[in-house]
Image 1 (tube, helix red, strand yellow):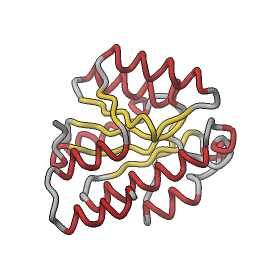
Image 2 (image 1 turned 90 degrees about the vertical axis):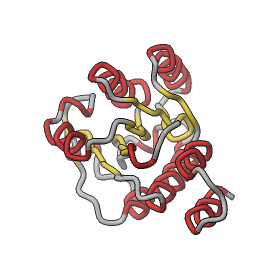
Image 3 (image 1 turned 120 degrees about the horizontal axis):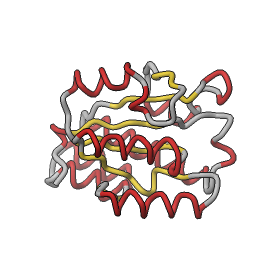
Image 4 (image 1 turned 135 degrees about the vertical axis):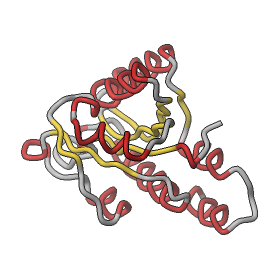
Length: 179
């Protein structure tokens, strides 16, 4: 089980200039928004990264709107772990389960997941909230991460796993999101 008290989420590089080239990007944007809103209901902390913002632009508007006020971590390394600010934020929060979403699955998301594993975190890949320019790149990366020990799940499944019980206000809010 993934306890919400031990979880933090990372939105990896969902940026304007690359996003339109991503496989099924419109569905991905919808799934990201759903997951972000659900995680906010559950009070799971969210971290946002942007890869070379000057070149790839800011976070896409739909995701930025769902996040509300946020300060993205500007990075140049593919793995989020290459940025000291990212490492400091994870250390400050002290959460062991790191939920990953964003782009591209086979580059920044995968390298971050593998670094998380190596350091002793429990990375959680939300498969329907990641993508790449080519479907085959995404599929290969998801399989590699699964083989390496990354937890692979889907958006709706994760939200209900974090929720644990029905009949609460959180349950009602999550149920509306996933309909």
